[in-house]
Length: 393
Ligand code: 13P
Image (cartoon, rainbow, N blue to C red; front, side):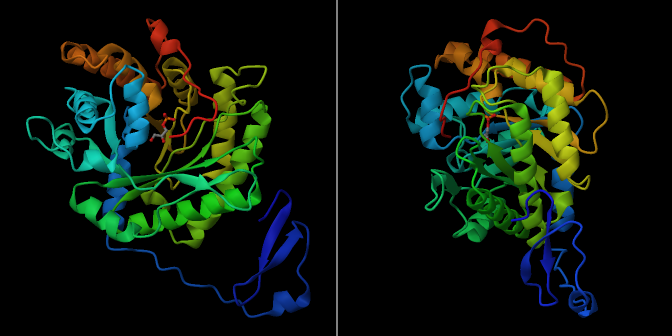
């Protein structure tokens, strides 16, 4: 891996031959070697559609509603309000969210779990059709979750590449137009170069396969909030991770205009002695993104990662105080769902109030995407942090 101050050198036969300091001048044998540039295969059958899909998700004032919790994780959400993790309870919860009238004004895409992509409302209307009516693009989580990475520092890797092409083709037929693959990087565990390389390579292979099957890939290397490290350390790790991700995206001929990113914001570790203000988080996060993300990428859709609903909105707002090269928005799960769950409590008579609670959060983040959120009139519930040490999705 290239680390700070080092560059990789290639031979004419495209083999990496090692690392040299930036000021190293290649000797005559390398300079005189004939240059052979591998020709990338770019335009796929779906390229124009991918670019259009990514652009429509990255529309002004819009972001993504992430409700792609696996059945096990959805069970945790339901347990928090005393409900059993049954298919009908998951359906009731997803129905509440996806049939919220007017949601499409603020939400341009919704990430679903496979069960939801194929599910219908209790009246028999496909969830995908509920979304289409609100002009919300349906998306699908395609990774198969995290498992321990042997040979690493207690880190993990993300499974799901086997059979991904055929699954993606099926998801497209079912109406999905974008995909999500979430892998994680842990700062307290190192991160080791092995774990970062594996995360980046997996994301790049997934992105190429998704694009080949008409799905815009959301590229999500989540840098976990866990740890007592400073914001400077997060910045260093985030720059390293994104440089690896873009290196392998390029190697896999991924079309940058047809992807979306889902980064963590650059913050101090959750157990660090000092908290950072939204302005500082925005400064560090934008610095990292400007150093690593080409303007060809249409949208940066942040995850909330355990921040409170209000924190996530304030931080997004701070990032939109001056124009950015990309659409800077949200793809929150916890920071859009917390007050909804607490309002609903699993009772049919609370569905309307819970849908209103979803609209409150969606609208607040929409306003933050436009840089005009003030943080006034927020409830105490919305200010409660949701960080859980060692949280697994
Ligand atoms: P939150 O961190 O916003 O809960 O969501 C992360 C995620 O990847 C859900 O799709």
